[in-house]
Length: 126
Image 1 (cartoon, rainbow, N blue to C red):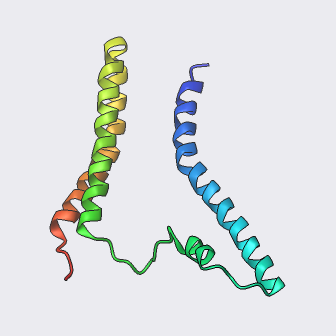
Image 2 (cartoon, one colour):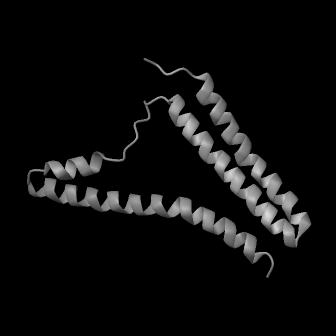
Image 3 (tube, one colour):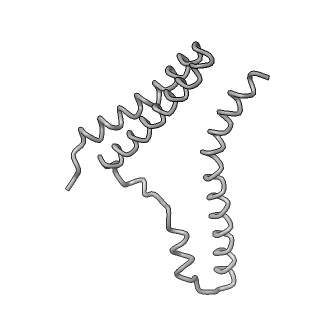
């Protein structure tokens, strides 16, 4: 029974990451089917539909910017601080558990620190 709590925690994180991608994929697939049916019937494509298909598409050619690195780093550091706070709260009841949370918080903390350093080192390209 004790293993269910950590499994539920990681399952929740996975669901938060995977669910939006899955639903976005389903939406795009339905849109593509609608476009295919319209093209097969010889109907003109509405500009709104073409615009909807091209929104929220990241171009892989876009280089990372220092501002984006700083924002990403700040978010990762905030996640680490949240884990530290959770560890301190849990530590009141179970003192040994605080060390685990502090250890887990080190991973997003150092990732965030690396992004912040990259954001400060890289100069914006003009």
